[in-house]
Amino acid sequence: MTRTPISLLVLGAAVILLAGCGNSEGAGSATDTITVFAAASLKSTFTELGETFEAQNPAVTVEFNFAGSSDLVTALAQGAPADVFASADTINMTKAVEANLVDGEPVNFAKNTLTIVTAPGNPKDVASFADLADPDILTVVCAPQVPCGNATATLEKATGTTVPAVSEEASVTDVLGKVTSGQADAGLVYVTDAAGAGDQVTTVDFPEAREAVNTYPIAVLKSSRNVAAASAFEALLTGPTGRQVLIEAGFAAP
Image 1 (cartoon, rainbow, N blue to C red):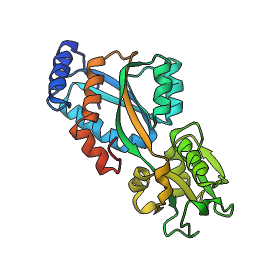
Image 2 (cartoon, one colour):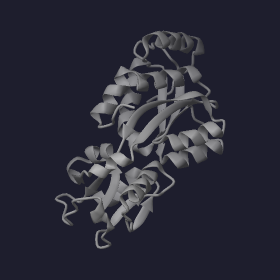
Image 3 (tube, rainbow, N blue to C red):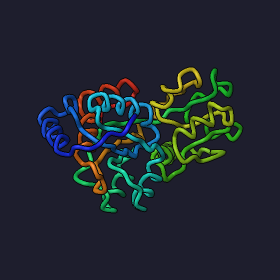
Image 4 (cartoon, rainbow, N blue to C red):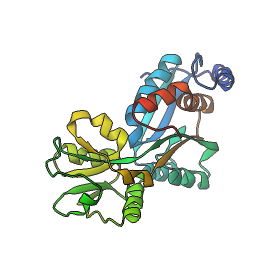
């Protein structure tokens, strides 16, 4: 992804066109770089959509910062430069809104739920969410302040199950990494992360997961130096192209 000089007038025309089309196809020669802060669980889909956006807008570079949503909000509040923020829950987007970081209304674009992943073959025979209460099963979860951790806490409360986690990670990708590296027997991750891991894990779905569904919102930031391109990226994500990529990855419609 290369950086190219800016032409805001062309970008403005592109965004006007997008407003009529409802997506970024045909955005044409938008310019400059946009920085997207996005939840770690969006890495695969957003990387693909960033490449699509650049192909449709050859003058634009899309750069990403993937991390836990709460860490991203903290960084933005401390002045980290970015054009777009995509959170894995509405709680952290609300924090961004209340901190006066967001330009306009956030748009919900996807939903996600948790599932259990284990080492391939499920050697500990984990069959349910309640099984994670067994301290002999080394389970890793997200920290409570990040969306996947908040969802885990919601499930524990809803089911009356306490998971004696051996560690709490800052992002869902860190949880997945602990399982795929053999440092944990089981972990709670999003269904999209489990699908993306392929045969590196065995997935154990459980019906209680519906008690903690996370909604993903996206917004252009007030600090953006390229609002037109940022808005065009948001339009791509929330339009037909973005929706297709997200659904193929396992996200549900908002």
